[in-house]
Each structure stands twice: as structure tokens, then as C-alpha cells.
Image (cartoon, rainbow, N blue to C red):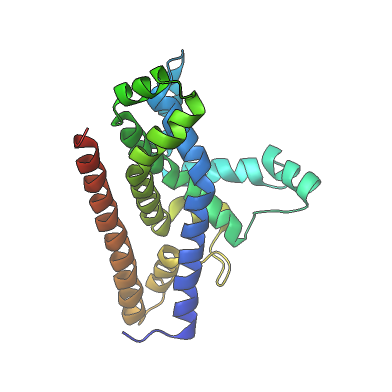
Length: 230
């Protein structure tokens, strides 16, 4: 399958956006996953619902909320402009932000399940032997949940690659800046005679997403086998 330089640029931008999305969301996703897995506090169900809200509301609504927040007059947009002198509007960083928000619930869920699968008795035994909470986390909780964390990253990457609704609402469809694979496919569908281009881009999307899903499943199985040892 021969791709033109423009098509390679679309693929490269999509990978860049998806990669930036998942790695920027990683600290937040893991913190939320750990809080929901180990925390006991009032309002936990509400936080869990808010985290997973992007999965159930229309992506256009998520994009519109991002637009309100990060527009020049919005609270987050005004803060970024004032203190950092940057803007994510109509830029690839804005596309990465939209993809991160949409991928976050899947990342949190995979990581939370992995953390919950870690046997609490192992952590308790380490504490009775004199290990502090931080040492228990670094030597027991994190290593045992690592395959699930990686699986969450891969799953989030697949979701970020396929993000469309929130992205086009938030940062529009700008060739070379925000035009990722889903947006490029949408644009090509509007042009008569572009069936070959649509087919090529669609095949690339399917291969990348399927590869990420298979890798995520393999990592999840490996995590389960490792935990069953205990």
C-alpha cells in the first residue's frame, strides 16, 4: 500500500497526538485509579461517575465543554495565556488534550482493575515487616500492577487514535495541524472519487487500533497469570 507524503503526514500526526494524549494523561489516570481502588471516602461513587462520563455523553458535548474551558475567554484558556503564554486552540496540542480526555476513562478502568487485583495481604505483610507505605507501593503495588498499567496505556492509545467528535468540535479540522486519521477520513468522504484514499486511511486505522487492542489483551492476561501465582 503506497502512501503519499501528505498521507504519511496524517499518520505521523495521529501517532503524535495519540502518544502525547496517553502519556500526558498517565499521571492523572493512575492517581485516579489508585484513589478509586484503595480509597474509602464519601463521594467516591460520584468521582467514579465523573471519570467515566466521557464514555457515555456524546463526544461533541465533551468537545464543547473543552471549548468553553480553553477558549481565550475561558477559565483554563485565560490562565494558560496569562501565565504560560500558550493556547491549545486550533493546534495539535488541543487535539491531544481532547484525545486524552476521551481516553482517560478507559485508562483509569484498566489500571484500577489491575491495582484491585493486587492481593492486599501482600501489602499488609510488608508493612508488618517494617516497610513504609511508599516502599510498599514501589516494591509491591506498582510492580504487580504494571502490566495492567501498560495495558491501560495501550488501550488509551487505541482510543486516542480513533477520537473524532470531541476533536473536531474543540480544535476543528485543520490539515497539517489537527487533521488526524478519523478527521482525514471524514474529509475524504466529502470529496467524490476519494474512495481509494478513504480505504487506505481506514485500513491503517483498523490495523493500528487492532494491534493496540491485541497488545492490551495480551498484557492483561499476563497480569492475571502473574497475580494468580500469589
